[in-house]
Amino acid sequence: MGDVGGLWADVRSARMPVWPDSGRRVWPRWPFLPAALGVAALAVVSFLQLDDILLLVRAVCFALALVVAGDRPGWALAVTVLLRLPWPGPGGAPPPWMVDTHLSQAAILLVAASALRPRSTAVLGGLMALAAALRTVVSLGSGQWAGPWWQLAVLWIVSMLLAAAVGIRSRDRWSALADEQQELRRRELRTERDRIGRELHDVVAHHLSVLAVRSASATRRIPGVPDAAAVEFDELAALSRSALADMRRLVGVLRDDDPDDDPHRAGNAPQPGLSDLPALVEATRGAGCPVALEVDGGDHVPDVVAVSVHRIVQEALANAVRHATGAAIGVRVTATPGGPVCVEVTNDRPPAPPVPAPGAGTGLRAMAERARLLGGTLESGPTDDGGFVVRARLPW
Image (cartoon, rainbow, N blue to C red; front, side, top):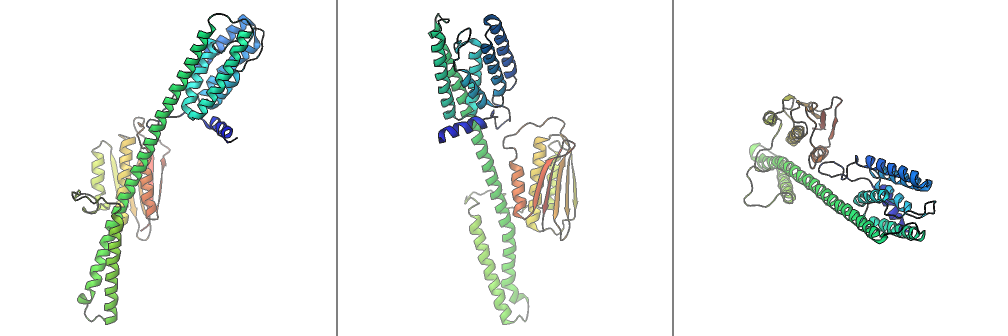
């Protein structure tokens, strides 16, 4: 029962797959309708010649299955398996290799094999072959189908096997590409998290270092410090050094221990902040996008928040340049003492349709992750005029 339930679930849930790198369907939808019309036309001609209403109904069902195969290939293949079963009629039971149903069956099997699991394709293909064998026996038994029937049967079998093989091959390519894109997105997200962790370490480690130095030197800088306060300062200095050592051990998981480390990596170079936004905007203008920057406040924003604001603006600008090349971009940063730092990056409608890019959406997830680490929020989405907006709220 479990195998039957799995087959049924696979048939019901099968959809036409799309290539993850471009978003295009594996098999285009447009050929199915003219093919269905061709099958229906052949059915009408056969009906006029043989005057067999069952033959007409069966061919129309094949045409409808072709239309359905463009979106629900699992259902289409299951229906055609049932249509392969023999039934008596005025003209006898036509064999499975008649040209109209033969070509439509091959097309449906090709599409279904690219959407179903290989095991489901094998089961339905086996049932289809069994039904076709029964129909062949009935057709030959009626005595109305003579001639080189076995050559036609071999041609039918070869074409069905070829359709199934091509469909399964395309499914394997699609699955491998989807897995590769998913792994790439996960790797990029992990890389961004590692960079966030290193930046947070650098900012917090600086403050801990200052705290340790000031605590250790307090008794020398401040005259007349009581003994109890001196002991307290010494303990604070020891705790600060211990916390700093713990943070260095923690960030060792994120940072490579490379003796030839790049001097511009996080931890060795000053971390960017709000004062670096004009240079970031100027670099974006050099990519061909007009950018307007407005910063209100921000003189006393904590370093860890300023770094995150810079990174969010940087990623939002990169997305705008990538997906809305040539569109005007507006950047607004508002920092209210005691309130959240609000970041808004908006781009107008692009002059040309955006080109799908691999890994799309990774930058938005990284920005949202950065905002969550600070207890903030990030929203993004299209605007009413066809543009795109990214809004972040980061608490002090």
